[in-house]
Image 1 (cartoon, one colour):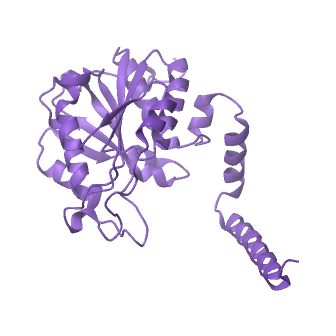
Image 2 (cartoon, one colour):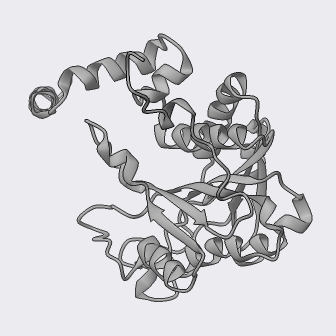
Length: 295
């Protein structure tokens, strides 16, 4: 016979959890929106584009970066692009990328390759306080390489220290122009090495003139307490300080949305102002036509 005290304790805990969920829902500033998005994720009504627009897909930030970078490529007449993920860990993000790519290739006349960079053995030893050793530990986020490779359909794993793999990447893989990069390396030092991909000796045509970037570790919690002097934020800051015609900037256009999602603050755009196609017109004639109505 079950212990009546433990049964009572479990029942009390269950009730508390239900009340917490109810309270959390009531405190949601957009409860109806959250409920609709939950249903849309589950039942997938409408088109992929419609669901992506309202964030009713898994990892909407991944879909956003891939979709809009592919749109830019299409406007530039580029038919093949590459998407990179730095920091694959278990591989859930890479598998999710494959889903978004499958859907986006049905919509836009652009073929998309994807590459996942990782040591495979987890995080390296932090170099100093800039890598936030109070939050991250060496060997965390290990990968089961054979198991992940067996599940991947088109993504290519690039295994090794990012300092080495980015150096040899263009020569080894000859990728289509890079249109989006998802950074999730946790450390300042690793992110610095990953950002060097923009400084490679590769032809500038290996990149779109503007590259959508997602940085996972720029907000955090009361544990990380990210600032501009550690982690990914410091890596971005130093990159901008040491480059004249190449800059990484927050995507301010997302902040005009009526509802600001947390991931909106993690989307940045890499600009290469000296790129031979940076000034190519990609707007629409209609947007630039302010003729007098009724003529």
